[in-house]
Length: 178
Image (tube, rainbow, N blue to C red; front, side, top):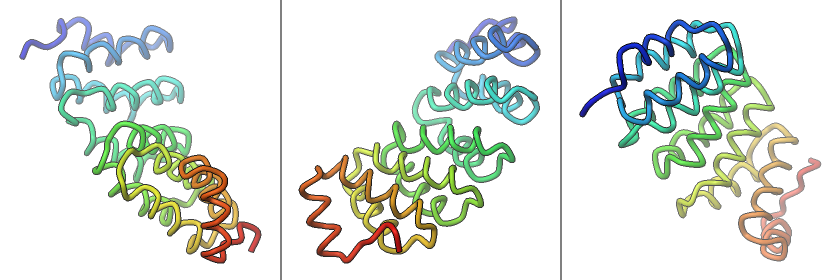
């Protein structure tokens, strides 16, 4: 597999211009896979600009053959920037299938940020995996954060349809306000 030109990877590593640095992160991921992962994760870990970090997270989601999934999981669980964790949660749910669905429910429970938890619920709702509805129901029933329970019910309604969600909400005794 041929990688990106070395200059392009180096540009992704070092360019301080947000628009250039962010764009230069994306293109190596399209062809280089693991060869570009080091440059991408370096930008996530070291760049001070949140927008560049978010573009780098997107680039991880575009690595071929799900090579970026372990790195997305690491970012979702350990990055100190909630906006970056939210971006990783979105891409884990939206594009990573079963592996994303295995990760997100734990993160809904464990992340210290309510906004990140809500983004993980959103990611679950965008999963095409059959267990996504069950994960939303579990969060609607059991999450200790009322806003996360409400978010779970909302996305359950979107995924299952309003009528089905209303029936589920009534049948399961779910109340987002309690």
